[in-house]
Image (cartoon, rainbow, N blue to C red; front, side, top):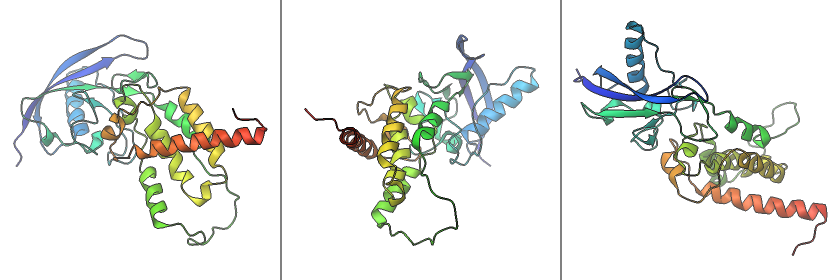
Length: 259
C-alpha cells in the first residue's frame, strides 16, 4: 500500500467576477501518491463539506486528458510540474510529503474568473466559430480514400488537431496570446485538401477574431512548454505565413495596388 502524504494547499478563493480574491490555506492529510491532482482536490472539498464549509470550484469533465476542461496554475506552472500532462493526469507522486502547493486559476485578461479556480474560456470558442470548420454539401459519405493525402501532411494535421483547447498556452504566455491555440485549430484544416476552398477567408476570420481578445505573440515559447499535448510553435509560423498570403489575396481580389 502506498504511504500517505500530508500536503498544505494555498487555494485561490474568489466569490465571482469582479470580486476581490485571496489565498486560503487548507490542510490536506491522507493524500495517496496514486491520486490524480483533481482527486486530491475532491478529497479536500469532501472534508470542507463535512465541516460545513463551502467547497472551492474548479473545472473538470472527462478526467482523461481529452476534453480540455481542467486547467490550473500549480506552483506557478500551467497544469503543474510534469510536461505534456493535463491537470487531471498529474499524479500526486510528483510531489513530496509536506509540500506546500499553490493552486490558482488561469491568469489571463481574456479568461475572467467565474468563481475560485474556474474561469470563462468562451473566447476560445469565438475563434473557432469564426472559421474553424469546413463547409461541405450534405449527401452520402464519400469513400474513405477518395482524396489522397500525403502521410506527412496527414500527420501534421493530426498533430495540430491534438489541441484540446484547455487554454494553458494563453495562461503561460507573458502576453496572454492565443497564437498556439489558433494556429492549431487553423492548420489542422488548412493543411488538408478539404480545407483549401475556405483557407484564406478562414485564416483572416480566425486571426482577426483572436486579436480582438488576446495579446500578441513575441515568441517566448512558453505556450509550447505548457501545452499538455506538446503542440509545436512551428504551427504559429504556418499561421503567420497563411495570414500574410491571405491578406495579399484579398488585396488582389479588391484590385488594390501594392507599394
